[in-house]
Amino acid sequence: MTNIRFIPPQRGPVTDYSDRALTTGPLWLLIKDIGVLTAALPYLPLLFFPFKTNSDKQASHSRLASYRDTVVQALLCLIELALLILFIPALISLPGMLFIVALFACILIIRLVAWPTQGPRIVESTVHQGTPPMLQRRPDERWLFINGICTGRSGLQQNVDRISLLFGRKVLGIHNQSYGIIGDIVECLLQRCLSYSTMDVRVANEVIKQHLVDPLVQKVVLLAHSQGGIIASMVVDHLLTELSGECIGKLEIYTFGSAASHFHSPPTSTTTPLPGTSVEFAPCIPYIEHYANEYDMIPRWGVLYAIKNLVFNRYAGKVYVRMGATGHMFVDHYLDPIFPLPKPARLEPGPAMNTRQVGGHRTEAAEIEDADGFLNALVDVDADLEQRRAQKPKKRLVQAKSPRQAHAHPASMVNEAGGNAIHATHGSVDGVHRDADDDLMTFADGNAGKTVKELSRLWKYLGGAEPDD
Image 1: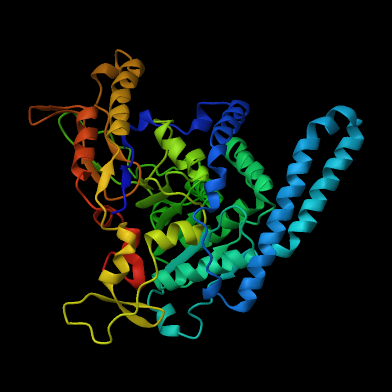
Image 2: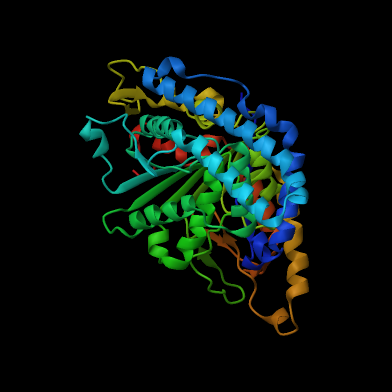
């Protein structure tokens, strides 16, 4: 049975969590990020392990495109590694203007080498073309995917086709174009530390925004992998300043191996309850979930570090960690172990059998949900993290209170990330005192003994199903 570590969503007074960019300068963020990334380098060889290949499932032209992209990525890695070694000597020895010219020439070479793997910024899943009933079952939904590092156009096409086949929806892919693993990591650093909106961020922002403001669209499901998690988090930052809560509320986000350093989902209400009363809060983005492998280098730098090491950094969402698991590839190391494609079903399942449509075929839900034991695994709640979360609010509230605030309304509890509205307060309710750490630990204990299937939402979309039906 797969061992799953579950990290509950952040809870507590809104003053207890802050985006790290608001508490630390960009230069110091860059230095710290490079340090954390360097510490994670021993896990670099595990990015592609266990090695798998889906070549037997691909058409010949797809296999050729995959081989081409692999060769280009290897060539880019060698070029960028050589440039990285020569950078400091060139900076010291070359005159200023000559160094700038050489730098631009190197960037041009990298772009030319990467050009064969580039393509349109938006691609569409092709697996269900020619089967209109499948695509028209959910006309008020839009499914989007943002790829991660080292992904060419053929890789993106394979990813969106796999998502479409798995969830029974038409999927649009937003191409986060790659310029080699070193170039992609440098871009990640610029996005994380300087909040630099690259072309990928700008394109994703426009596409997602268009769907959210469309009155005919009631739900926008965004999946993101690796660097795509950074792009998704930056897009959310922009959308929160541009769109109404009603539009933002259509969005659901699910990340895999996320490299993002923060995720925002503020409460829909900031009303402070009167003493002895309570109020319900709901996160602005109702559902956010993150899936990560324990020994995947990228989330160890991204979601896992941001949540476990930076306890009061703002990071909305539930987190599921496959303990002992390695690998960073989207399909091979995330979708296949978590949501494998279903087995062929019996032609005439019994009347009590829950059936779903996948690729035009009826399949048994039990076969879909097996998923290498992932969905049926009992979660191990990260109690240590919950203890650390519970201890800090009391200290910060004491430090922040002025004499006037000490007798003001109690701070309200909010759920910052994934799930339903939360009904909670601090202070005295019906004569019973409740404290922040009591609420947090009670919430953690309430998740103990549950399976991933009981806590997760994404799996409920498998085979074209609808969680809210």
